[in-house]
Amino acid sequence: MNRSSGRRLVDGQIVHSDAFPSSSFSYRRFLFVAILATVMIVTNPANELFSKTMDIVEQVTGRKSRQHDLSDWDLNKIMDPPISVTNYGLFTLEERHAKVVVSLLTKSVSCPYFDQRKGSFCSAVAKNLCHGNPLVYHPKSYAYTAHRTICFILVGTALLAFCFNGSIPPFLTQEPFMRALLTCFSRKHFSLLSLAMDLVNCSLFVYPALERMERIVPTLQDGKPSLALGVPEWTDFAFYAIVMVLFLGGGSNSLANFFFTKDPCFGFDTTVAAAVAYCSAIPSKILPFANQPAMLTPQTVFWGYLPITALLGGTPSYLVAWLIAGSLGVILAQYHTDNQSVLLAFKGLLRSAFSN
Image (cartoon, rainbow, N blue to C red):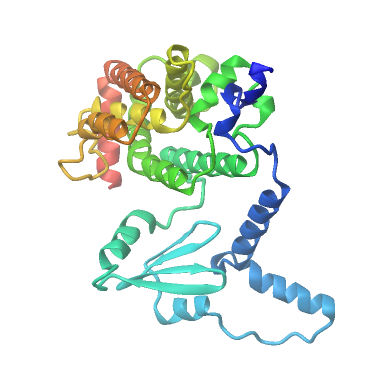
């Protein structure tokens, strides 16, 4: 009997077949995801694609054009103008004076702040998700653009894992170097819970680290790709953001896998560890930690991960990868703080103070 028959190559790693589904690709799952996403995008009132589609259908069928009744979306905007409108593509959130309105599938659902059961949840949604920013690219915030890009990559790799074995296209994992870096986006299997946790962690911990990095990188004396290569200044932030996400996150997974070959380490947790450690090494008086409560400090989050993961059955490879990523995150933050120009840092603080 062939002893290697129980193994297969997934995301560039040799894994046991019992950890993955037997099929390599599911067209049914792909069609399901594609149809569901298309329906939600078209019927999202903020996209205005549904009304435009109906107009095109009327023109093609030769029906007489008529004045359409106002939709719930348009009527609510007139009767109760929103404070902010945030379009997430598949759905839209509107912040109002007494509620949050979720619009999807041509319908609108209200979430009132003063409801005894869900009032606190609605307030949290309004505070953290109703920001009125663009879907991906924000011309005034590199950190926001990077955060949204990471979130879309997490969703995309989760969908790939849902449709076939592995979350990274095979042509990207042929080279060992790329395979090592992309382990932070690799998934053993699709799970809505793990995807939700990755997105929450990205918003709570990675995004604040990116914001700090965006403020610090322009004040560096050395280590700027824009100075060495003559490229635009935004490449400085992009370079260090990639270093933190891929090199520190994916590299820590690969280092842990070098020592624990029987239980490979995948996932986004190491990037979170690097981001949390990066925040912990930056003086909080200069750059506040995302207005979090005093007990939720980067230090408590970092060290609290270890016992929680151990109690939940986490393997040693994940614990070691977390510690490696945290150490590298501190080193990166220390390099940035030691390499700051005092004059440029003071200029950045003044600019930040007057912009707020």
